[in-house]
Length: 195
Image (cartoon, rainbow, N blue to C red; front, top):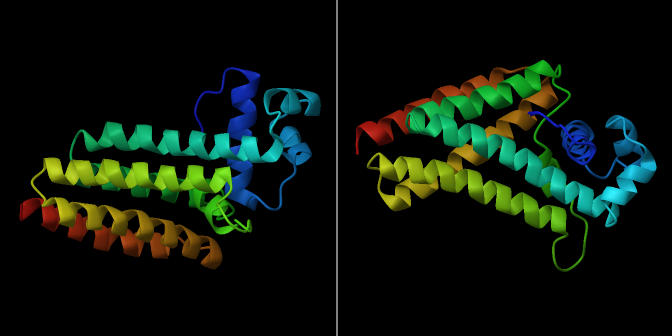
């Protein structure tokens, strides 16, 4: 889930996304994030005067953009190809980290403890999930699936994959993601063939 991070600011954002997918948001401090990104603490505060909240928001957006780029590229070949790429990405994340990493977007979503309006990182997470769902739904619609069904199936894909990632981490086994992959592949393939 990493991309090229040429400048120090972007390296800090990518490092924050990586740390959030491993430890969640609540367990991190700006000092931890700077250390993880191999950046001076002063630079971190320079680039992110809004502190942890600003950095977490940008890290969520970064992680969302990485996944969205992959989805856009793979969905060009159709919904099944996009689904398989989405599943392969998360399988690589969980198995490549020895089941220590998951989705930083989900990590932020489940840790919000703010009363009232959601914190900016949670708002960013909601936007990321909406983008992923929209990309999947658009591809399904473009391949003849009815709009309502396409939207519901896209929601099912994102929710099932995110849940499977959590199960994989908890059980330290890729089986839940493989099970979800098999079922979603069948559902999406059937929806497209039936359109």
